[in-house]
Length: 341
Ligand code: F6P
Image (cartoon, rainbow, N blue to C red; front, side, top):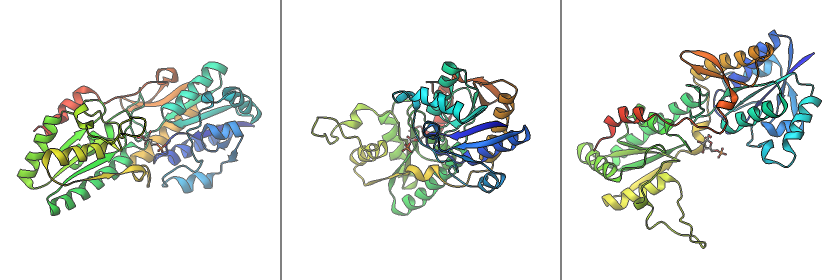
């Protein structure tokens, strides 16, 4: 019997379960038994697996998280890890594997294809939306619904108390979630990793919002690049390292001093990764997953099921490895109209 493995790696995201379901249905149609590998690459290193059933994947379709579990284990960062991954792949009798994950998980998939010619395909995932070569990563739009909803709620309370509030959202390397939250919810300003903070504009825009409507809300990506002057007077630890705290906190404290008014900061954290996948995070991941299986079965491996120009296309995994997809400058410029001082 042909056996297909499936794993989910890295930070979880709503839409992983639909992707697993897509893998399952296509694989079964093509005559495979489907083996779930637990907790990402960790499960391959430890041979922790489960046989997936139709009931498992059907009942998970509308659920957040991943029924397979996840981890950030990277076999290439462990002594002898890649050799164990290869041996276990063979010992488990896998004829192929679908890796659903972000930069790191897909990177491992690409390296295993390169080093051992293993038949592996990938499906892109991350709420950060920053996997290169694809215009869609599962999890992003559901997370955006959450962050936008929270932004709206903060506006209610900021308005009542005539306050400035800062909302920090995820996005280590890219500001998709930050910028889109700010645009969707009507924030007064946004700080992203792709563009260094312009403190004069930030202060001007916040002041203007305060005087025009009596409150202001600023969105900050966790990986925002701040101006050095904002990092002045930060607490220093025993080794002389500046204690940053979250970027949202730094911005809130900076605004507090600059405007001489109380500023509250909300760090949304992992709540933005949970919850039911939105409809788009159910439909596209299932389509991407079943294409990844179909291609693997036909012998086309080492590819990512990317979403480009309205269709699912195979993209060589090596084009994705070690890269990021930053916000395009033109998009920052276009939306910049909402954040002018
Ligand atoms: O990569 C996705 C992401 O959500 C980042 O935005 C965030 O920095 C990170 O995961 C948090 O990961 P962890 O779950 O390991 O704290």
